[in-house]
Length: 416
Image (tube, rainbow, N blue to C red; front, side, top):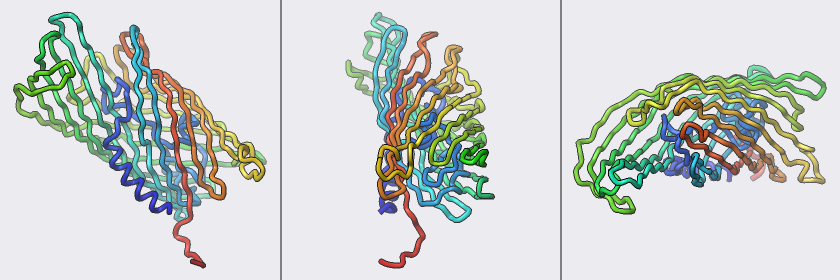
C-alpha cells in the first residue's frame, strides 16, 4: 500500500511544485525569492534542529542520517500560512497553502538511500504603488514561481555511532514577473514581462556522530556542508505598450522584439553545525548554527541600487520530550512534544537594513497505534523584516502537517 501512496504522491507533488505560489512576501522580489526551510515538520517544530540519529524519521538536511534508517520511510508535508504585511501606515493580510516536501528513505544494510523533491525557494508578490495625483507615475508589480530541488543521497555507517553521507541535487524551476508602469489618469502604460528558466546541480556532504556520556545520557552532533554551485538562468524579456481598464485588464498596443540572455547565478555555500544532549526515546535539547556565504543571485531583471547581500546566519535552539514512548495505558504519554526558537539573518539587505526572521515553534507527534508511523503537526509564529526605512514587516503564523510512514521492504514473506 505504501508503494502506491509514494508513486501517487510523487506525481502529485511534481505537478503541484510548479503550480503553487509558496509565499506572499514582497521580499521574494529579490534574488530567486524566499528560501524555504529544508526539512520535515518534525525538525521544523524544533526550529530546524536536526542532530539525532533517527531510525524512523528522515533528516533531509544531512544525508549521513540515511544510514540510520531501519525501515523504509516515506515523508510528506505541507503548510498553511497566514501573513500580515505591515508598513508604517497600513497593513494587509495574505494566506497560502503549500506542499513542502516529499521524500523516501531506504535502509540497505550499512548504507541508506534517500531521494525526493523539495521546493527550495518561492516567488509570490503583488505590489502596488498607485498615486492619486494626476501626472504622477504609478506601478503594479507581480511575481510567481520559484526553484525546486530533486535530490538523491547515500549514507554509510562507518561505526555504530558514526555515519557519513552525500547527496546530489538537481535544481530546476521558473520565475515569472510582470511590471506595469503608467501615469495616473492615463489608460496607457508600459508593461514588462520577464521569464527566467533556472537549472543547475549542487552537492551536499555531511556526517553525524553520537556517543554515551552517562548511563542514560547521550551526546549528538551533526555537521553538514553544501557546496557553492552555479545556477543557470535563461531569461526572456518582453516590453510592450498596453491599454488597460479599471480592473487592469491589458490589451497590447505595440510590442517590441523579445530580448533573450543567459546569466549564471551563484547559489551560496552553507555550513551547518549542531549538537545536543538527551536520553534516547525520552528527551533531547540541542542547538544549531547555519552559516551561508553571500552567493550571487541578482538577475538581469531584479537588480536594484538600494539592495545588497551579506553572509547569512541562522541560530536555532530546540528539542523534544516524550513522557513514555512505550506506554500501553496512556496514548498521551506516547505523544512527542516539540519546541524551539530561531533567529535567522537572511543575508538580504534593503535600504541598509538587514532582513531578519525571528520565530518560535511548537509541535506534536502523534504515533499511529500498531505501527512505527506517525503524524506530526507543527506551529510557528514569527516576524520577518521591519517597518523602519520605509520597509515591510511580516507577522506570520504557520500550521504544518507531516506524515512519516514506515514499512519493511525487500523482505520475503513466508506466508501469502
